[in-house]
Image (cartoon, rainbow, N blue to C red; front, side, top):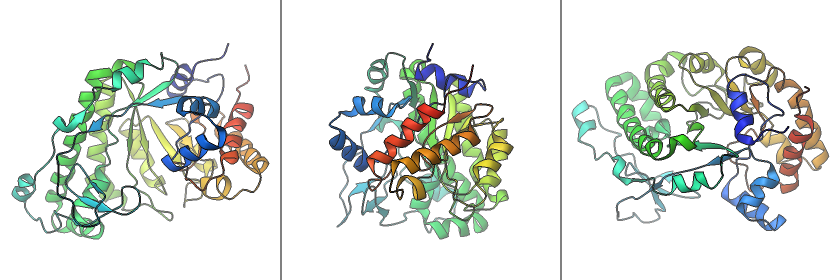
Length: 352
């Protein structure tokens, strides 16, 4: 008898073997709109056509009114205005010159009163326990710190004023934890996974050394993992790029899953990652968005590449099938994504 998506994903996170590999379909708004128009489907029918075993509930931010700078299109909860495509790029770094703990404390930090969770319970209930439900704040504390300080200046400040940087991470993480607590108090009984995201890897290697990761980044991740576990949820981290050096520490703090493994990044070969970590943590993704989904001229090529990847990742379970990028981009052919999802269904069946 076929499992529901909720059952299938739960079995994977418990380290057992499901009926088949769960399917994950993360997509950009632009790709999703293109796919809906191409297939003539609404949101939920398209999710079902993709075979997605997951659904997500998200709080809304009720941000205070701000006077936008010329060209600004968005303001983060931390008061950083941005311009450009999507969320854009920061137009300023308000904590760039901060060098004391008092100055960090004096900054106008947001609180959880702006996090509106009123709609998430009804949304989660609408799926009637069929799908694995993701919830909680995305919690991109690393990216917010970059916005507040500036990327290069953040590294300098880690050396020159380490306690200041630690306090900045603490204050950012405080906000996300408070927001997630509101969401979990509202509907954690209908959720399965606390899904968080920070990108600590580049194409060629981690964005920092292991000692720096342990000193500045791991404490916030540990707080978030503990929060999810306190509410009985599994915790899955989205992280792009090459970060193999960090995975042992992520396992050690109790992280339950890693999302959107990027097979073409340095030291992220699926064979090696599966061999070394497949029995310790759930691995999600690794079907190449860059070279396969976007560039393949034939869905048949996508199907064959997906089949080969499944042969690597399926043994022993603890695998979720999906693309190697968090949000499938608009330039990706719809037929290629369908070929990937259908191939996971066809070749991802575990033998009884």
